[in-house]
Image (cartoon, rainbow, N blue to C red; front, side, top):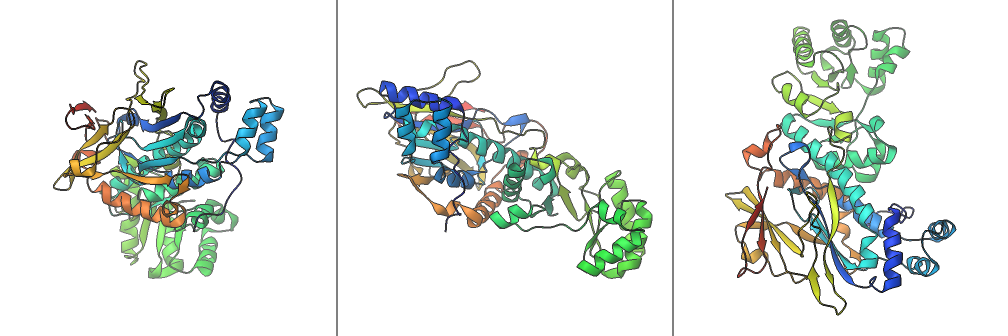
Length: 455
């Protein structure tokens, strides 16, 4: 079942998309069939891989990309396009096709993450929406995956809603869950995407009461002894003693939100054990990122809560993806490859297939087979030691609903867990470096194929 239809997303776009459409309708090029490709030229901040996220959200948003009376009135009143373009937009429906990497998949420089095929008119105006969704969600998912790698078997919870816009907070929680986080504090993310939610009390709860002990007793009365008590509102050592005195050895957990975390965690663990609360878990939540989590690997910490860093992509809030025309029909209907040649911002023309080459289950390269013009010659059969990376998402305007909603999120999470196992060991490191595997471009026609490496 597809998600409930929301308000129109048609104006979640840049003005120049519609002015290009307006001009194309005037000069007769609007109906030329085109292939647009969404990709990243490089990985941000020297990261070794990226994680695709947002695909399921994008599909639902494309379904709602409709120009209703309010949207058309705005365009008309502000003279953004002419009357004939208004008439075209009134009946707009995306009837083309979209292929792409599965959500949760890893990507590398040049990976054809999304391919949009259709007339110029219907495909060009999806550019901004596609980029805004995938750039944000993939940046969050990539940061979250790095944190998940650093955390190892210790669970992670996302709790960064207050550090993001109200809509992006929900999207960020979804992306983090796909990339390895186990829960979110955001209830809308829980309701919309089926993500487990968590949370107990903040410092204001303790400050509300006359004493820390009264606050702890009230929380336990409401939530049971298995709750997690926040112990650093005042003195941490006294907070631990009070928590155990009130809850006994059944105390579920304590949370530390300040201080030199490795030292504080060790001291708290020693005190809990000395008081007999050996099963009480320690959660830390103080401005963590992947590097802080890695630094806590030897500390007696049981779980992490991450806020600002994950919802902002840990310093890289966008994945740097672009949306470029790579093939089109000419005036007589023949297909030709097209490419931008700008210095440092070029693109590779042609329709593409993508494969991950593997050696005993470990990724060795990102193999991109490029077709001259439109015809896709490359198939998985040509590359037996590889995995086909692309799947159909929209066919002739029909969205594959398996990628949407909570079930789509669960599938993306499971897929990410599987494909992350393919990374070579060097790909798990947090330091800045080259991509974990090289991107190799080959001609889709095996007779003409001459590999080129773009790492």
